[in-house]
Amino acid sequence: MNKVLKCSKGFTLIELMVVIIIIAILAAIAVPLYNTYSNSAKFAEAKNLIGVLNNSAKLWASQYGDYTQNGGWKGVDVNNTTQESKYFPGTAASIITVNNATSYTLKLTKNANGAADPINSVTLTHTDGQPDPLPTVDPVGLPGCQS
Image (tube, rainbow, N blue to C red; front, top):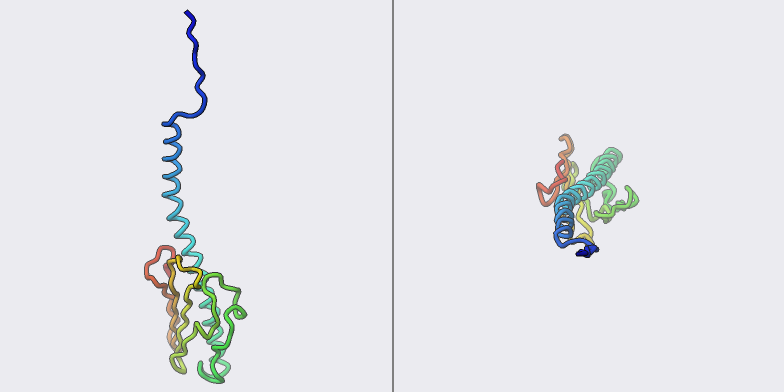
């Protein structure tokens, strides 16, 4: 009696399911980590831009006496003041609010194309004679955006 053995070709259903489960587990781990790193990078860019504008404001005040002299410094273009911002574009006029001669607020708001981005805005309020606070992010407590 000769038995003919059949050669199986391809993968079994169980083998394919195991591979799919492994890929799903890796994706479940990788996607949240990527989002955290992405938020962290955007927040770092915003802190950098706010820092440059904050220093520009202090330089202006040291040169002209306060933040409201000579028409203020709101005509400065952010993209000429710093590197071009991918996530927080705009001119200084749309970012700076001069509260009075010794206080101002810087608020970076995400661009219109970033509707799906979780960071809505990053804000810093400076008052002369007080140490600068850390920039705050909206929404508060976003992963990767702790100051």
